[in-house]
Length: 424
Image (cartoon, rainbow, N blue to C red; front, side, top):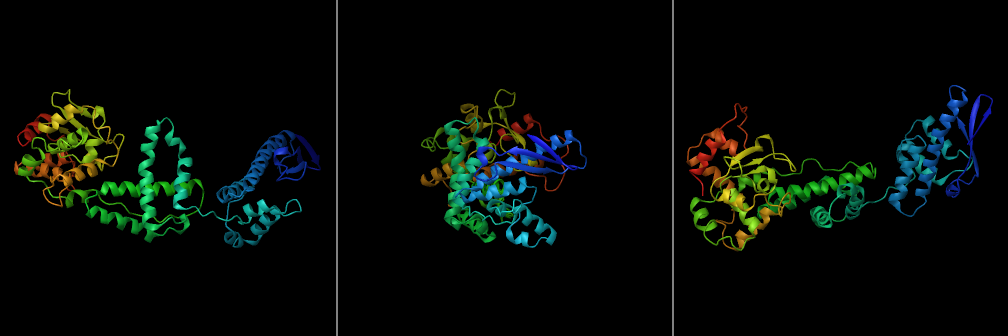
């Protein structure tokens, strides 16, 4: 690198690397170093910074010389940034104050010849790429590659499949639209589509998973590709409490004579069968049971119990974090699977699997009943046994209806004794 001084101004003189000859026709460039002071040492420091920015600009130009609309658009953004300008669309550039507009035009023709790539970057002439929903999913795997680090092939498959399913569902409802064309009505149509599936026995948790995958995929692509879009999401999820309110409780007779009858669940796989039994005397949500990690299952304690807490997967709310003693068939289920239920852990499959089995084998008390009904049955048994409301709410993971929680509540021994009296 050479420094040359003309009057009080330093200039950096450098040969253009061969790599950039296609975007910079000059073999040698003179770049003025704007300094408040004329120190040569400061000029050399500034020269290094300016050269780095110059290289970045040339790299952006190289990237812009492509037929790939996404890559060209991103290159225009990068070139604008390297030149010290904000990326603006052509219509936004046209609205700039005259002085700022002329400054950009002058930068485009800095070497007496208008530069096509500079114009795309500084005057907003780069055409925004139309990234479709399907293309967004393809881009997601590239942009979120760090999430797959350390995963086995099977883990990657299980990481990808729920998102692929969700995006396919979305395309089925609204079509393979460009991200810029997605409207609030499209999102509400997708929610309505899921609402109809809830009426057929699917869970709010299933719907929320799908909606969440669609939102997170499109958000990441919009952000990383710097598309400048305002995606019309807003509140779309369903209250998972709706799952509970809409699902009737199984009667005690039905649980005893049908669900727990000898051989009734033999054709259901062992893990799913144990999950059903685990819910009977704990009243835990299916997602809470399958989300338990091995150290949440305390069979070696004086009072065997499970801990439902925010680890690996968020709990619904603060009251949902709780300890539940194990009795009856629920205790036996966890003795059979002391490390939990890895087949279903953190996946949205258990309710669908069990509900399908119960429906096909005539084990639903009515068409409205689902696996969630066992949770309601547990609560009803506590109510009929006149168990204190505070204890009931603590075990169910319900809030105290606006009241603060004072004290520790029932001890494990006390809670176990209460549940043992009503257990199956």
